Length: 67
Image (tube, rainbow, N blue to C red; front, side):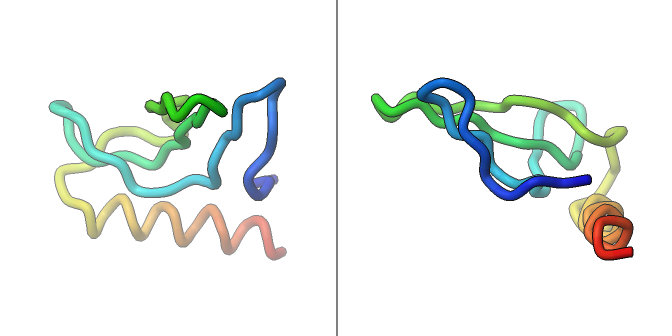
């Protein structure tokens, strides 16, 4: 199950989205602190060669959540 933005202490965790690193595209979450600091929080998928592949994976996550 994918929760919408949630709070852990004073840290907000975003919903999954397509992200990019030197290793490729992936689906992950960001954290954001009250003081404005932010960064990657988790990787929820393997790495993909294209953003389009990662977007298809993300759509699959949302489909599973709805059923």
